[in-house]
Length: 313
Ligand code: CP
Ligand code: NVA
Image: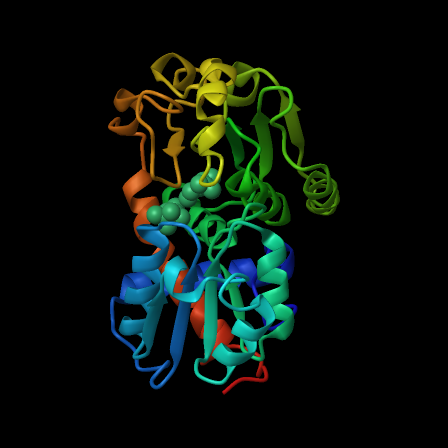
């Protein structure tokens, strides 16, 4: 790992990601409980709701012999009850790592710069790197390898799309994204991904047309049209994204053995139909489970067994 934190996929090298996926797959297959994180404590500081991220981190810590403490938005009041910098310094005195879910990516950066212990991005407005790690593990499991795949993302150029774009191109997968004008991926992230793509010899295609993105793809991926924190825009977004639904007709354009992915929670009938969520090509629940396996590998890397030493309690 490049530093003590995982705020962005850019904090990882392709080798890091390959190693994490291999470790996660091995631990999943072996199915044994470890005590590698005995005595370690992870604080979960969340400004937004969560099912998968919270539970997968809590279970991962327990299965590795450590513990997690969940701190709800009202309890901490990041930047309101107390400054973000002070929260970081106080938590550094108690816990071994912090996983934070914040509205602003800047909050995470402040947390990380004042924290003595590793800070993990558990979703911000800019990225969701833990999701991308679970996603790549799922692709590896279902397709044998990530390198050479063509991933088609249909919908909002959001946090999930950003981390997936970076992770895919870093690891040698082609990435296509279909988004409506005004909802494309962040330009800075795209430029970083273009460099990754150049180095790994893959292509990035940005289009307004879902059928162009999905045509002959190995993976068809979508996410909600309205992310947490954007609820006031929900009605406008429903109209803007109407033609960006992953439905049976769109899926027919992908390879016959293409898999369908979604980070969940899904809004069935909006970005994805019931029919596609439930079809044999859909791997969304394996994908959700893989969050835990990927995060176990990450926690071991940051806190224990196989990582470089970092300044920590
Ligand atoms: N995919 C994901 O991060 O789900 P939660 O919001 O439930 O954690
Ligand atoms: N883009 C979604 C992902 C949820 C896991 C959001 O930020 O709400």
